[in-house]
Image: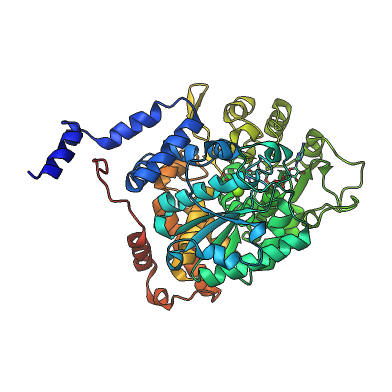
Length: 532
Ligand SMILES: NC(=O)c1ccc[n+]([C@@H]2O[C@H](COP(=O)([O-])OP(=O)(O)OC[C@H]3O[C@@H](n4cnc5c(N)ncnc54)[C@H](O)[C@@H]3O)[C@@H](O)[C@H]2O)c1
Ligand SMILES: O=C(O)C[C@H](O)C(=O)O
Ligand SMILES: [Mg+2]
């Protein structure tokens, strides 16, 4: 043995190679007291041993996704300036205006980049304007692309646009990592965004851009401005719309079967009318049009509520994005209380995207149960601390009849001696597959039909056992396989819309294409040994 080898060997504990390092890592992770400490630990592991990190993540999705993603990623964002360890994404600031291209070029392996998640930090989950602290949401989404769809880690690009923040406490925090200024006006922001998107295309020619957690006005605005010009989509509008349409397709079957009514008689009430609420409402139009109704008939079955109550067309100064669903058929005094709106609408489904914790109170949930044999109640606001109702309460107040899906994860719960599994209506089921399909087909745009077909593929991916268990979403452990199925549907939709640029796929059967997609999914190289 050489002197160097001997020196190395003597630094290693004698039994190291007979133990399983993965087990050691999991034990260390589980010894941490809080979610945030676990987040920091995993972050360090990813830096030291990326392969092991992804192996552990993929092998323990149910345990680890809630740390890297919703809900704990919310804590990570809120505290990011304080827990920051090392650079792990790209910051493009308002001060870079005029030379954004050069900033983007500083990212290593630009030609390899395929997917960027871009936030401006202005509406992180339901936590408000977190400014430059928003980066972990981009990182968390990309970890799901890697774990859930098999996107290669080196092709992912997390971006936080630092345009300032309107949250005063960050300006006063000596550790705050971002620029201390207020957010720009629309004109300045538009100039920035146009330059940014143009530069992105030039520097990363093969890149798909996922917009994430922009405040509602800007989320709609930049989606409208850019969707026909660039390869991009908005996760909070389209991803959420798609995932909720999917869960609703399954939920409505259960609810209609219990009521003995046709699917077209579903009546959907949205509590919350921001980018997520209106994005989902627009996508749910296709629930009805898929059953043969016209768009007008579909719109008639949807009601929206914001902080001022039922949204009606006669309300003064109504924001643009709320107009489409504003009711013209209600003539009485403004309905400001949710309870009164429910009594008036008699919804079969109540969907929460309001950021109002416990807004679905006992009275509200009991009222829904009194109107429906199986009420559909989806409290979709994130993180858990802003969820409209907890799973256990929803079960209790509906005597177990609720069809439930929440944005953040809940545990399997026992009620009256029976085991109930909650659904998680979170766009994490959809964006990995939409991204994978878009990247592989080299689609130059993400079309409405790609988003709709993704929802249908997800809804159809339930196994017989999952159907029998009354689930509305498949189990998360199958996400890799499900993402491949979604990608297949997305590729076929891209072909129909003629936006694909990979003609090779057109000659493949569905089976052959699915096999190809699966073979393309990146896997970490497994090892029970530490990297030395
Ligand atoms: N489950 C998912 O996959 C998913 C996806 C996207 C967003 N979300 C969640 O949806 C929530 C909303 O996101 P957004 O971008 O639409 O935010 P937003 O702030 O733009 O919208 C919130 C909406 O709720 C309404 N609202 C606020 N207080 C209210 C009250 N007291 N009564 C009635 N309505 C009230 C507001 O008027 C607004 O219309 C966030 O918590 C976000 O995390 C979940
Ligand atoms: O990030 C999530 O968990 C879902 C969604 O994109 C959100 O903004 O809440
Ligand atoms: Mg989001």
